[in-house]
Structure formats: structure tokens, C-alpha cells
Image (cartoon, rainbow, N blue to C red; front, side, top):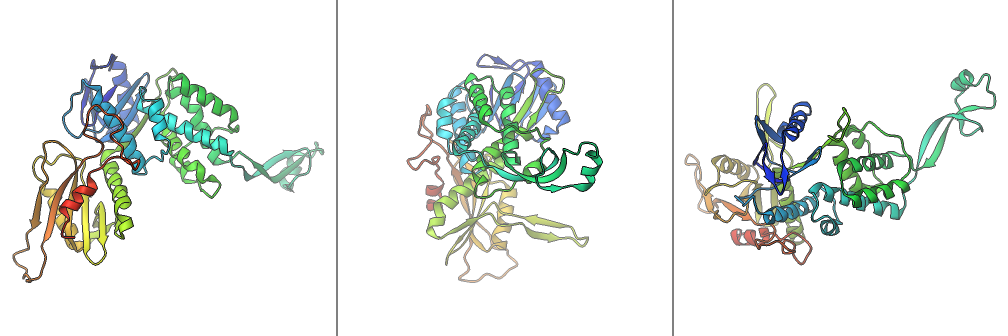
Length: 433
């Protein structure tokens, strides 16, 4: 079942022959209540209202795809849903949120299946690439009983356990094998896959990968477990697979009562995704020109006498050599005719702190909105200089993908990246720079 962010799904709603039932509502309520999923959606007495997170939730036998919403669409038509599913996946790739170099093949193979199946397809593709390269071995310290002397004898334990069995040795030695954390985490994610999909193709590929993957004991996986990972020249190839493995293992909620009511939620904050996508796109477009495009660190805006502080951090700062700075703020929302007062005040502070002559608000493209350009007024109590330049503030509506329907391959340009109007829009509005 496909829904849009900020939409409401009521008990009894039906989409493409799939009905949202009371048992699905109870499953989401349990996840909301026990695992603090308040940031993902709000519970209603007869349904669920989604928030600004997009992605996929699987509750038992129901898979919910939550897709971006820019403007009002016809929810009865599947064309818009397919288009935004494709755009969402490509934004995840181009923003660096998910390293998915094999996305095109996954979209072709799993086009009619769920968004979750596409994630799993990408994960298995990375696994198969690792198996083709050969799994990495590492040295690890092993301590235990041996029938032959190997390594260093641990005399305390040896005397305590082998006083009678003199043919044994309790030693500590090094072992060179596949049993290290990288392989253990990926194997644990592979064990989870059959519980998340009904696709016979994906289950077959999982079984084949498990036959070739090294045996490893199960772990109790937390965020700290992934924080312990370190990468070098040999294990860097594991990183894409481990990114998806982290999403699967940390966002899976097993049904402890048995059955098939497991819940997995792979969700991404659309506001943060929009910001990262625009930042990476600008870096790709303007870094070759010598412009510095980055997200600056936090700066103290206000210091309290009790030691408390208020900080600020613009989304994107462009430093143009010999010209000046441009501050950009990404907003995944509709301004409804004019920028919000709070957004303008925010950019006014950024402009003065970073000495910027241009400030830009970046909104997603809609048919009804029109771009606006304006100038911040100079404070009346401060003297003005004849050569002092005013600070301009522009709103730009960035269109991603193609506006043509039905969706084909028009969402992707000849360079392999998602079509984006950001370059043309900036060139038009920042002519003085």
C-alpha cells in the first residue's frame, strides 16, 4: 500500500485491493507505544497520520510505502506513486544516504514489488559482489582448550582445568579466518531477509548467499556494535552492504510472541534528505568551478549568563572567490505565495553573520508557486554608505525528475544523475555574482 507523507490512513481504507485493517493498526500502535516511533507518525483513534518521514514500514503482511508529497495528487492513480518512488531512491543515492550503485538494475528487477524489496535487492547485489571478490579474513585472538600446544599457555586456567587431562593445553593464540565483525553483521542481516519478503527470487538469492557465507555466531546488535566497525583497504568494499545491514538490523522489531508479525521501518527524514541532496548536487556542479560548497559547523548565536547557548547553522554556504558568500537554506515545504516570516528572519541573521550578499530559500517545485526576489532593508538606526550593497533574498523552486507523465526514464539525465533545475535557477537569480 502506497501513501504520501502527511497523509492519513484510516482503518478500512483500500488501495489496489489491499485493505488497512484493525490488526495492522494495532501493530503500528504497539510500535508507536513501545519503541517511541512518535517522530514517524501519529496515532488516531481510527487510523494513522504520517509525518515528514519517507520510506517503508512493514507490519506483518502489510507493507506501507510512504512517499514524498510536494503538491496535491490523485491518490487513485499509481503513476505519481511510481514516479516519486523512483525519485526517492535516486535522491537517497545522490545524497549519500544509501550507497546504491546498482540502483538501475534493482529498479528493473523489482519494479512491481515493494520499496522494501528494492532495498533487499540492493543489499543482495552488494553481498554477491563481496562473494565474487572473496570474503576478507582477519586475525583474531582465540582462547581455549587445545589438544596440541599452540600459542601461549594460560597457566592459571591450564592448571585449574587440565590437572587430570594432561593431554590438553589451555592456550591463547591467533586465528586467521572469516570470523570477524563485518562478516558477522552481514550474515545476521542475511538471516533476517526471509522474514521480510515473500519474493521467491529474493529468498532464493538469500539462500544461495548463505551457503557461501562463513558461519558465525549471532550477536546482540545495537548502534554501538556498528560504531565499533573500522574500515581499511580490504574491508572498504563492505561499507555499502553494512549501511543497508545497519538499517535492517536496527529497525527490525521481532514479534516475540511468534508468528509473522515482525515489524521493520526503514524511514528517512525528508527535510534532511532534501538538504543533503541539494548540498551534494551543488558540490557536484560548482566545485569544479573553484567554488567552495559546504555545510558550516554550528556557531554560537546567543550566550546566556548561566552558560547556556543558542546556536545556528545554515544548510549550505557557497564561497565564491573574489565575489562573496551565498547562504542557502533548504525547505521541504510549500511557502504558499511568499516566504515565511521565520525563514526570512533566519536568513537575515545568516547573511550578517557570514557576510553574504545573497541568500536563497530552496523549495521543491510546484505548479502553482512562483519564485520571488526581494531585498533585506537596512536598519534605520545604522548609517548607510554610498557603496554599500544590499542583501538580496531569493526563493527558488527546484524541480527534481521530469514533469512528463507517464514516468519513463525521463527522471534521469544523460549524465546518469537525477534531473534537477537547480543549476539553471541559480544562474538566473544570481546573475550579479
